[in-house]
Image (cartoon, rainbow, N blue to C red; front, side, top):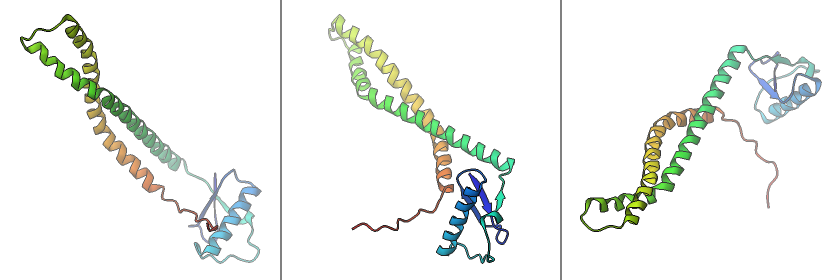
Length: 172
């Protein structure tokens, strides 16, 4: 991506794909004309203004570092939210079975006769209970971290408020 500005209006920044080239400057010129026609900018250009008169805007190292830090924060936030989703799936998958096993544990505290098979299946169920309980604990911990991640993501989404280009075609 390359950005250009105008000598007459340095606050106007026009960004196009590619590197600084005649083609990129022509694309910037086309964008400039569109912006002027739409009233987005009110810059009067001298007769004979051409693409070669654009001034390339170079991004500073400090700006790149900030962008990199912001990108890292967003990537980390998305990873935290992805981990939270995986934990929630695990909790939901094991919840019903864990509750059934939990109610079956009561047989250990009664004087009613039980079979060896019932106790053996109960022992197998302890693995499910352990998996559910640990996933549930991890989910609660991850949810606290995910609150911050959600805020970071919301800020990133709000800062990217780009104008939506309206289609000139009408549907019938």
